[in-house]
Amino acid sequence: MNIEAWLADRNTRGTLGTQAERVVHVLARAPESASYASAREIAERAGVNVSTVVRTAQQLGFDGWPQLREELRARYLACVSSGHVSSGPAADPAAQMLRQDAGNINALATVDNLAAIRATAKAIKAARRTLVISSDSGAGPAHILSHLGTIAGHDIQLALDASTSQAVHVARLEPGDCLVTLNVWRLTRPLRGLTRLARERGAIVCVFTDLRSSPLAEDADHLIVTPIEGMHAGPSVTAVVAAVQAVISELMDDDAIRSSGRVQQMWQYLDLMDDQP
Image (cartoon, rainbow, N blue to C red; front, side, top):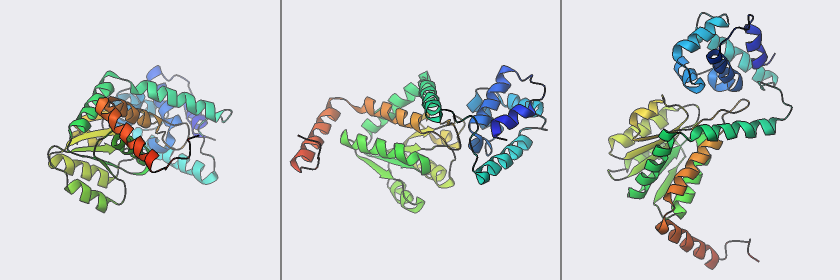
């Protein structure tokens, strides 16, 4: 029995309200992350309060959220070991994923996020230099920000390797510098500690994360909250990439356009590209 079917079976009376159904939807669509999340994190993803998460667990026959989470984790791990991790029908997974990502991007465009995106771009423009750090699934969007931002003429360094090497880069930050931290799904201790150290060193800290209640928010001057809900086991980084692209669009002023032109002229001079007639 998959996760979605199991949750439906637990709802023996079929009387869950609208908000409780939203909680169940989060559990069914992202069982991997939900099985390790706090009630507060589930509440934020579902757009409800913590008490609703607790009541939903009780309506499903558990004493509270910890007991539901424990059973959800056991069932998810059993699905993984058996090779059945899908939480819903696989009739058209590609179309389902595209619809989910479209919803994630639409949810990204809040007033607060747009303000934080503009502020992040402004911080990068004003910075003496910018350091981008991330881990695991955040590495892809981090590469995009560093690559395109550098082409736009900004001094952006990327540190994705071992935390010891990342610490060397963070130790060089000074007031007037900028740190961008990209965190997707699980937050590692090194990423948390490095972000705090950058703040203590006087750098402007910009954070991309999937939870407004993330511990990273404590040290963020600018916080961009990106939905990461996927269709199956792992998170989707599509909305994170969209947020990065939005920052890049804010960086593209006249100076950035000239910088991009110079880079492309150098590529042409060095005959690096094989896409010309």
